[in-house]
Length: 255
Image 1 (cartoon, one colour):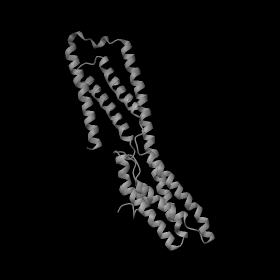
Image 2 (cartoon, helix red, strand yellow):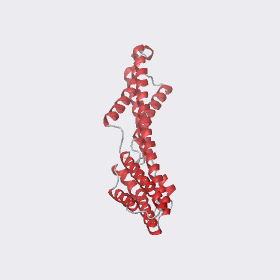
Image 3 (cartoon, helix red, strand yellow):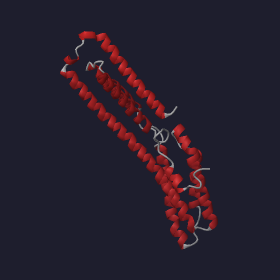
């Protein structure tokens, strides 16, 4: 099921539940319920609860957005480091250069075609990807430079492989959800309390008030969906992408 379909259903369900409760509550209350007599303390509490929950939602959205941005940066650093290995191997003999480039290409193809799905499904890196990157490392470190020019290029190549490995590990750590379960519990309970306080204000069945109540509940549902979608940087609708690999290795990123 599409994430956007889930969002539409969630927002529609939130509106329907709130409006149904509001209408049923007003019918049961009848003429004895006077909205204008809502105590000031209830209005104050409703305002404070809304402000506090808005702050919590803002912090949660900022946190998961920052995590998604960091995940995308890890991908960019990894792709750039591998591209530097591919380019700087130019100074090596043909057979060594071609072996390094072939193994880099094999690793990139595996990451884009297979490992990306593994991260989305399990939140972990693949063992084959680890082995392929280790093969690239061996290609670089096992070669003994024969000239001063090759010797000058050796250490930068080793450093770039290490940078790619570090970025890969960081990418793996970013693949799983970042929001603890207790935070989700607080967000959901907070949403129920915040929406529930709407009824403490004794809203009436006027189209304007019902429209505002429905829109408010739909907004809460949308913000919770946004947090959920960003919480897993590599597996949902607004996920981090493999574009850096596709841009730097256009010939091998897709097989």
